[in-house]
Length: 158
Image (cartoon, rainbow, N blue to C red; front, side, top):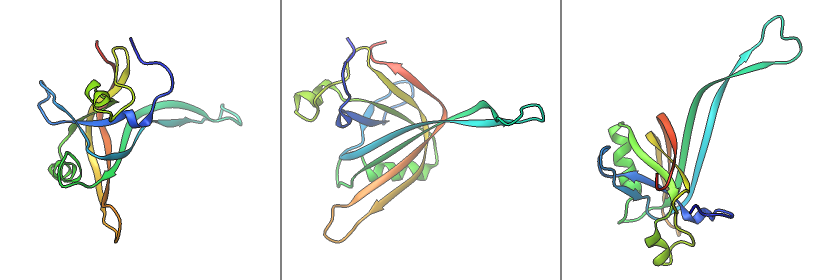
């Protein structure tokens, strides 16, 4: 049964496919501090001499952007891995979804994804990877992923 109520943002992760397209292995970005998922539809103006004072619009191309920020670590899947993927300039598979039951058992999450919950999955190109290393501060990174084709809203368990 799908989860109900308000989503705890800490229970949502960005997973990268470290397996193959046929047999994906979903690896979460380690020590992430924030994720953002943005859907955008480009709008085309439809203005003619007959439209009068109001602009008419038509939905055009869709685009999805994922932003991730986190702490840079020596281990775990994070900055170095995203940078290596970005350098290949190849498309990567990503999933924006809830936590696994093991994370709840380990005390790392409040709620695990359940059958019926929705998540996003698709192919992306890593547009940028940034790192910040300030004096007397934790090293942090951020990355931006842009959709490369359709991003599907899927349902856990189907």
